[in-house]
Image (cartoon, rainbow, N blue to C red; front, side):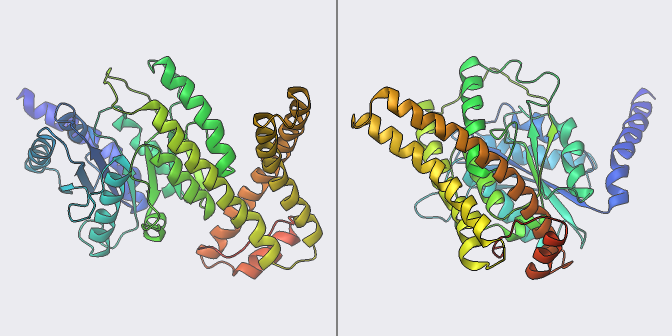
Length: 386
Protein backbone atom coordinates (compact mmCIF):
# COMPACT_ATOMS: atom_id res chain seq x y z
CA UNK A 1 0.00 0.00 0.00
CA UNK A 2 2.96 2.30 0.45
CA UNK A 3 3.48 2.75 -3.26
CA UNK A 4 -0.20 3.64 -3.69
CA UNK A 5 0.13 6.37 -1.07
CA UNK A 6 3.25 7.71 -2.79
CA UNK A 7 1.39 7.75 -6.09
CA UNK A 8 -1.41 9.79 -4.56
CA UNK A 9 1.07 12.30 -3.16
CA UNK A 10 2.81 12.53 -6.53
CA UNK A 11 -0.49 13.09 -8.30
CA UNK A 12 -1.40 15.89 -5.89
CA UNK A 13 1.95 17.60 -6.46
CA UNK A 14 1.59 17.30 -10.24
CA UNK A 15 -1.89 18.82 -10.17
CA UNK A 16 -0.75 21.76 -8.01
CA UNK A 17 2.06 22.54 -10.47
CA UNK A 18 -0.27 22.09 -13.42
CA UNK A 19 -2.99 24.47 -12.30
CA UNK A 20 -1.43 27.77 -13.51
CA UNK A 21 -0.95 26.37 -17.00
CA UNK A 22 -4.44 24.77 -17.06
CA UNK A 23 -5.94 28.16 -16.24
CA UNK A 24 -3.85 29.95 -18.84
CA UNK A 25 -4.51 27.41 -21.58
CA UNK A 26 -0.91 27.45 -22.79
CA UNK A 27 0.99 24.48 -24.18
CA UNK A 28 4.63 24.17 -23.12
CA UNK A 29 7.51 22.59 -25.01
CA UNK A 30 11.11 21.99 -23.96
CA UNK A 31 14.12 21.69 -26.28
CA UNK A 32 17.12 19.83 -24.84
CA UNK A 33 20.41 20.18 -26.80
CA UNK A 34 22.81 17.38 -25.88
CA UNK A 35 26.40 16.54 -26.83
CA UNK A 36 27.99 13.48 -25.22
CA UNK A 37 25.58 13.65 -22.28
CA UNK A 38 24.74 9.95 -21.88
CA UNK A 39 25.63 10.30 -18.19
CA UNK A 40 23.26 13.20 -17.47
CA UNK A 41 20.48 13.12 -20.08
CA UNK A 42 18.26 10.64 -18.21
CA UNK A 43 18.21 12.86 -15.12
CA UNK A 44 17.36 15.90 -17.25
CA UNK A 45 14.44 14.17 -18.98
CA UNK A 46 13.09 12.75 -15.73
CA UNK A 47 13.27 16.15 -14.00
CA UNK A 48 11.18 17.97 -16.63
CA UNK A 49 7.76 18.65 -15.03
CA UNK A 50 4.81 16.42 -15.91
CA UNK A 51 2.76 19.37 -17.18
CA UNK A 52 5.16 19.94 -20.09
CA UNK A 53 3.41 18.97 -23.33
CA UNK A 54 6.38 18.26 -25.60
CA UNK A 55 10.06 17.39 -25.23
CA UNK A 56 12.57 17.45 -28.09
CA UNK A 57 16.04 16.11 -27.32
CA UNK A 58 18.55 17.15 -30.00
CA UNK A 59 21.57 14.88 -30.34
CA UNK A 60 24.41 17.13 -31.50
CA UNK A 61 26.73 14.59 -33.18
CA UNK A 62 27.51 12.82 -29.90
CA UNK A 63 30.33 10.28 -29.83
CA UNK A 64 28.68 8.32 -27.01
CA UNK A 65 25.19 6.77 -26.79
CA UNK A 66 23.41 10.01 -25.88
CA UNK A 67 20.78 9.45 -28.59
CA UNK A 68 19.96 5.90 -27.53
CA UNK A 69 19.89 6.72 -23.83
CA UNK A 70 17.65 9.74 -24.46
CA UNK A 71 15.26 7.73 -26.63
CA UNK A 72 14.87 5.07 -23.94
CA UNK A 73 14.33 7.74 -21.27
CA UNK A 74 11.58 9.41 -23.32
CA UNK A 75 9.92 6.05 -23.98
CA UNK A 76 10.06 5.23 -20.27
CA UNK A 77 8.48 8.59 -19.42
CA UNK A 78 5.57 7.80 -21.76
CA UNK A 79 5.19 4.30 -20.28
CA UNK A 80 5.01 5.85 -16.80
CA UNK A 81 1.88 7.75 -17.79
CA UNK A 82 3.14 11.02 -19.23
CA UNK A 83 0.57 12.28 -21.74
CA UNK A 84 2.88 14.58 -23.69
CA UNK A 85 4.83 14.06 -26.90
CA UNK A 86 8.54 13.28 -27.01
CA UNK A 87 11.11 13.09 -29.81
CA UNK A 88 14.84 12.50 -30.11
CA UNK A 89 16.32 14.02 -33.27
CA UNK A 90 19.72 14.84 -34.76
CA UNK A 91 21.10 18.32 -35.47
CA UNK A 92 20.22 19.08 -39.11
CA UNK A 93 21.27 15.62 -40.40
CA UNK A 94 20.83 16.60 -44.06
CA UNK A 95 22.73 19.91 -44.00
CA UNK A 96 25.93 20.21 -46.05
CA UNK A 97 28.38 21.06 -44.67
CA UNK A 98 27.12 19.59 -41.38
CA UNK A 99 25.82 22.12 -38.88
CA UNK A 100 26.79 21.36 -35.31
CA UNK A 101 27.21 23.17 -32.03
CA UNK A 102 24.86 24.16 -29.24
CA UNK A 103 23.34 26.97 -31.31
CA UNK A 104 22.64 24.64 -34.23
CA UNK A 105 21.12 22.05 -31.89
CA UNK A 106 18.81 24.63 -30.31
CA UNK A 107 17.65 25.94 -33.67
CA UNK A 108 17.09 22.39 -34.96
CA UNK A 109 14.91 21.70 -31.93
CA UNK A 110 13.06 25.01 -32.24
CA UNK A 111 12.28 24.48 -35.91
CA UNK A 112 11.16 20.90 -35.26
CA UNK A 113 8.85 21.75 -32.36
CA UNK A 114 7.44 24.75 -34.26
CA UNK A 115 6.63 22.53 -37.25
CA UNK A 116 4.90 20.01 -34.99
CA UNK A 117 2.95 22.83 -33.32
CA UNK A 118 1.87 24.14 -36.72
CA UNK A 119 0.47 20.70 -37.48
CA UNK A 120 -1.38 20.72 -34.15
CA UNK A 121 0.42 17.58 -33.00
CA UNK A 122 1.30 18.69 -29.47
CA UNK A 123 -0.27 22.09 -28.77
CA UNK A 124 -3.80 21.19 -29.95
CA UNK A 125 -4.62 24.69 -31.15
CA UNK A 126 -3.48 26.41 -27.96
CA UNK A 127 -0.97 29.20 -27.61
CA UNK A 128 2.45 27.77 -26.90
CA UNK A 129 5.91 28.63 -25.65
CA UNK A 130 9.24 26.80 -25.71
CA UNK A 131 12.03 26.64 -23.15
CA UNK A 132 15.63 25.53 -23.64
CA UNK A 133 17.21 23.27 -21.01
CA UNK A 134 20.72 21.97 -21.65
CA UNK A 135 21.34 18.24 -21.50
CA UNK A 136 24.20 18.57 -18.98
CA UNK A 137 21.92 18.84 -15.97
CA UNK A 138 23.12 22.32 -15.00
CA UNK A 139 19.66 23.90 -15.18
CA UNK A 140 17.14 23.53 -12.37
CA UNK A 141 13.88 22.08 -13.74
CA UNK A 142 12.04 23.52 -10.74
CA UNK A 143 12.67 27.03 -12.11
CA UNK A 144 10.79 26.31 -15.35
CA UNK A 145 7.38 27.45 -14.10
CA UNK A 146 8.76 30.85 -13.08
CA UNK A 147 10.58 31.10 -16.42
CA UNK A 148 7.34 30.75 -18.36
CA UNK A 149 5.13 32.97 -16.23
CA UNK A 150 6.08 36.36 -17.78
CA UNK A 151 5.19 34.98 -21.23
CA UNK A 152 1.87 33.59 -20.00
CA UNK A 153 1.14 36.89 -18.23
CA UNK A 154 1.93 38.71 -21.51
CA UNK A 155 4.59 40.87 -19.90
CA UNK A 156 7.46 39.42 -21.97
CA UNK A 157 8.08 37.67 -25.29
CA UNK A 158 11.40 36.12 -24.27
CA UNK A 159 12.61 35.25 -20.77
CA UNK A 160 16.20 34.74 -19.67
CA UNK A 161 17.12 32.74 -16.62
CA UNK A 162 19.58 34.78 -14.55
CA UNK A 163 21.99 33.04 -12.21
CA UNK A 164 23.11 36.47 -11.01
CA UNK A 165 19.66 37.29 -9.63
CA UNK A 166 19.43 34.05 -7.65
CA UNK A 167 20.33 34.31 -3.92
CA UNK A 168 23.22 31.87 -4.47
CA UNK A 169 24.51 33.87 -7.44
CA UNK A 170 27.36 32.22 -9.33
CA UNK A 171 28.50 30.16 -6.36
CA UNK A 172 30.46 27.20 -7.64
CA UNK A 173 31.36 28.74 -10.99
CA UNK A 174 35.12 28.64 -11.70
CA UNK A 175 36.77 32.05 -11.27
CA UNK A 176 37.91 32.23 -14.91
CA UNK A 177 34.38 31.62 -16.16
CA UNK A 178 33.08 34.19 -13.69
CA UNK A 179 35.48 36.86 -14.94
CA UNK A 180 34.66 36.05 -18.55
CA UNK A 181 30.95 36.21 -17.79
CA UNK A 182 31.37 39.67 -16.22
CA UNK A 183 33.20 41.02 -19.28
CA UNK A 184 30.76 39.52 -21.78
CA UNK A 185 27.79 40.81 -19.79
CA UNK A 186 28.96 44.40 -20.26
CA UNK A 187 29.90 43.87 -23.91
CA UNK A 188 26.57 42.23 -24.67
CA UNK A 189 24.61 45.01 -22.99
CA UNK A 190 26.52 47.62 -25.00
CA UNK A 191 25.91 45.71 -28.23
CA UNK A 192 22.22 45.01 -27.63
CA UNK A 193 21.22 48.23 -25.88
CA UNK A 194 19.67 46.10 -23.13
CA UNK A 195 20.38 45.71 -19.42
CA UNK A 196 20.61 41.97 -18.89
CA UNK A 197 22.33 40.61 -15.79
CA UNK A 198 23.30 37.18 -17.16
CA UNK A 199 23.36 37.10 -20.99
CA UNK A 200 25.55 33.97 -21.01
CA UNK A 201 22.85 31.87 -19.39
CA UNK A 202 21.42 29.34 -21.83
CA UNK A 203 18.26 28.82 -19.77
CA UNK A 204 15.64 30.70 -21.78
CA UNK A 205 12.03 30.60 -22.95
CA UNK A 206 10.32 32.15 -25.99
CA UNK A 207 6.72 32.69 -26.98
CA UNK A 208 5.35 31.11 -30.15
CA UNK A 209 5.35 34.57 -31.75
CA UNK A 210 9.12 34.88 -31.33
CA UNK A 211 9.76 31.37 -32.66
CA UNK A 212 7.51 31.86 -35.70
CA UNK A 213 9.09 35.21 -36.56
CA UNK A 214 12.68 34.04 -36.10
CA UNK A 215 15.05 34.51 -39.06
CA UNK A 216 16.56 31.03 -39.38
CA UNK A 217 18.85 32.17 -42.20
CA UNK A 218 20.83 34.35 -39.79
CA UNK A 219 22.19 31.66 -37.51
CA UNK A 220 25.03 31.15 -35.05
CA UNK A 221 25.85 27.50 -34.46
CA UNK A 222 28.44 27.36 -31.70
CA UNK A 223 29.07 28.83 -28.26
CA UNK A 224 27.90 32.43 -28.00
CA UNK A 225 24.41 31.54 -29.17
CA UNK A 226 22.72 33.30 -26.20
CA UNK A 227 24.50 36.54 -27.22
CA UNK A 228 23.46 36.06 -30.84
CA UNK A 229 19.85 35.48 -29.84
CA UNK A 230 19.77 38.59 -27.64
CA UNK A 231 21.14 40.65 -30.53
CA UNK A 232 18.39 39.44 -32.85
CA UNK A 233 15.70 39.94 -30.22
CA UNK A 234 16.97 43.45 -29.55
CA UNK A 235 17.01 44.34 -33.24
CA UNK A 236 13.33 43.49 -33.52
CA UNK A 237 12.40 44.98 -30.15
CA UNK A 238 10.87 41.94 -28.48
CA UNK A 239 10.08 42.37 -24.79
CA UNK A 240 12.75 40.62 -22.72
CA UNK A 241 12.51 39.74 -19.04
CA UNK A 242 14.71 37.94 -16.51
CA UNK A 243 13.90 35.61 -13.63
CA UNK A 244 16.27 34.16 -11.01
CA UNK A 245 17.44 30.59 -11.65
CA UNK A 246 19.71 28.34 -9.65
CA UNK A 247 23.17 27.57 -11.02
CA UNK A 248 24.20 23.91 -10.87
CA UNK A 249 27.75 22.71 -11.52
CA UNK A 250 28.84 19.09 -11.72
CA UNK A 251 32.51 19.80 -12.31
CA UNK A 252 32.37 18.92 -16.02
CA UNK A 253 35.27 20.07 -18.16
CA UNK A 254 34.29 22.22 -21.13
CA UNK A 255 35.87 21.66 -24.53
CA UNK A 256 35.50 25.38 -25.29
CA UNK A 257 38.65 27.26 -26.35
CA UNK A 258 38.39 30.41 -24.22
CA UNK A 259 40.60 32.57 -26.46
CA UNK A 260 38.83 31.56 -29.66
CA UNK A 261 35.45 31.97 -27.98
CA UNK A 262 36.20 35.53 -26.86
CA UNK A 263 37.45 36.55 -30.31
CA UNK A 264 34.40 35.13 -32.09
CA UNK A 265 31.85 36.49 -29.64
CA UNK A 266 33.55 39.91 -29.54
CA UNK A 267 33.35 40.08 -33.34
CA UNK A 268 29.71 38.99 -33.18
CA UNK A 269 28.92 41.73 -30.67
CA UNK A 270 30.84 44.42 -32.57
CA UNK A 271 29.04 43.80 -35.87
CA UNK A 272 25.78 43.36 -33.96
CA UNK A 273 26.32 46.75 -32.37
CA UNK A 274 26.78 48.42 -35.77
CA UNK A 275 23.72 46.67 -37.18
CA UNK A 276 21.62 47.72 -34.21
CA UNK A 277 22.86 51.29 -34.49
CA UNK A 278 21.86 51.31 -38.14
CA UNK A 279 18.41 49.91 -37.42
CA UNK A 280 17.65 51.90 -34.28
CA UNK A 281 19.09 55.26 -35.31
CA UNK A 282 20.01 55.61 -39.00
CA UNK A 283 16.72 54.09 -40.17
CA UNK A 284 14.92 56.49 -37.86
CA UNK A 285 16.54 59.58 -39.37
CA UNK A 286 16.39 58.42 -43.00
CA UNK A 287 13.01 56.65 -43.11
CA UNK A 288 10.96 58.48 -40.50
CA UNK A 289 10.66 62.20 -41.18
CA UNK A 290 9.38 63.91 -38.05
CA UNK A 291 9.37 67.28 -36.38
CA UNK A 292 12.00 66.00 -33.97
CA UNK A 293 14.48 65.23 -36.78
CA UNK A 294 17.12 67.60 -35.41
CA UNK A 295 17.15 65.90 -31.99
CA UNK A 296 17.24 62.48 -33.67
CA UNK A 297 20.25 63.58 -35.74
CA UNK A 298 21.96 64.63 -32.51
CA UNK A 299 21.28 61.20 -31.04
CA UNK A 300 22.67 59.60 -34.18
CA UNK A 301 25.85 61.69 -34.13
CA UNK A 302 26.38 61.14 -30.43
CA UNK A 303 25.86 57.38 -30.59
CA UNK A 304 28.10 56.69 -33.56
CA UNK A 305 30.56 59.42 -32.62
CA UNK A 306 31.25 57.78 -29.29
CA UNK A 307 32.06 54.44 -30.88
CA UNK A 308 34.11 56.09 -33.62
CA UNK A 309 36.08 57.90 -30.91
CA UNK A 310 37.04 54.60 -29.31
CA UNK A 311 38.23 53.13 -32.61
CA UNK A 312 40.20 56.23 -33.62
CA UNK A 313 41.79 56.56 -30.18
CA UNK A 314 42.85 52.92 -30.23
CA UNK A 315 44.32 53.22 -33.73
CA UNK A 316 46.09 56.45 -32.81
CA UNK A 317 47.77 54.82 -29.82
CA UNK A 318 48.84 51.78 -31.84
CA UNK A 319 50.28 53.96 -34.62
CA UNK A 320 51.73 56.41 -32.06
CA UNK A 321 49.92 59.35 -33.64
CA UNK A 322 48.78 60.38 -30.17
CA UNK A 323 50.66 60.07 -26.94
CA UNK A 324 49.19 57.90 -24.22
CA UNK A 325 48.27 61.07 -22.33
CA UNK A 326 46.40 62.56 -25.30
CA UNK A 327 44.72 59.25 -26.03
CA UNK A 328 43.59 59.00 -22.41
CA UNK A 329 41.63 62.24 -22.84
CA UNK A 330 39.98 60.85 -25.95
CA UNK A 331 39.08 57.70 -24.04
CA UNK A 332 37.70 59.79 -21.17
CA UNK A 333 35.36 61.57 -23.55
CA UNK A 334 34.48 58.19 -25.01
CA UNK A 335 33.46 56.89 -21.58
CA UNK A 336 31.31 59.96 -20.98
CA UNK A 337 29.70 59.60 -24.40
CA UNK A 338 29.12 55.88 -23.77
CA UNK A 339 27.27 56.72 -20.57
CA UNK A 340 25.04 59.05 -22.56
CA UNK A 341 24.55 56.38 -25.22
CA UNK A 342 23.49 53.85 -22.60
CA UNK A 343 20.85 56.29 -21.36
CA UNK A 344 19.64 56.81 -24.92
CA UNK A 345 19.63 53.08 -25.62
CA UNK A 346 17.66 52.35 -22.47
CA UNK A 347 14.97 54.84 -23.43
CA UNK A 348 14.82 53.75 -27.05
CA UNK A 349 14.73 50.04 -26.14
CA UNK A 350 11.75 50.54 -23.84
CA UNK A 351 9.90 52.74 -26.33
CA UNK A 352 10.47 50.38 -29.24
CA UNK A 353 9.34 47.34 -27.24
CA UNK A 354 6.12 49.07 -26.15
CA UNK A 355 5.29 50.35 -29.61
CA UNK A 356 6.17 47.13 -31.44
CA UNK A 357 3.99 45.26 -28.96
CA UNK A 358 1.05 47.43 -29.98
CA UNK A 359 1.80 46.84 -33.66
CA UNK A 360 2.18 43.07 -33.31
CA UNK A 361 -1.06 42.81 -31.34
CA UNK A 362 -2.88 44.85 -33.99
CA UNK A 363 -3.62 47.54 -31.42
CA UNK A 364 -2.06 50.22 -33.62
CA UNK A 365 -0.23 50.70 -36.89
CA UNK A 366 3.34 51.99 -36.94
CA UNK A 367 2.11 55.55 -37.59
CA UNK A 368 -0.54 55.37 -34.86
CA UNK A 369 1.93 53.95 -32.38
CA UNK A 370 4.32 56.80 -33.13
CA UNK A 371 1.61 59.44 -32.70
CA UNK A 372 0.50 57.85 -29.41
CA UNK A 373 4.11 57.92 -28.28
CA UNK A 374 4.42 61.62 -29.12
CA UNK A 375 1.16 62.38 -27.31
CA UNK A 376 2.60 60.71 -24.23
CA UNK A 377 5.65 62.97 -24.39
CA UNK A 378 7.95 60.43 -26.00
CA UNK A 379 9.89 61.72 -29.01
CA UNK A 380 11.58 58.46 -29.99
CA UNK A 381 10.62 56.98 -33.37
CA UNK A 382 11.83 54.09 -35.42
CA UNK A 383 11.41 52.09 -38.63
CA UNK A 384 9.14 49.16 -39.34
CA UNK A 385 9.58 45.80 -37.61
CA UNK A 386 11.13 43.02 -39.65
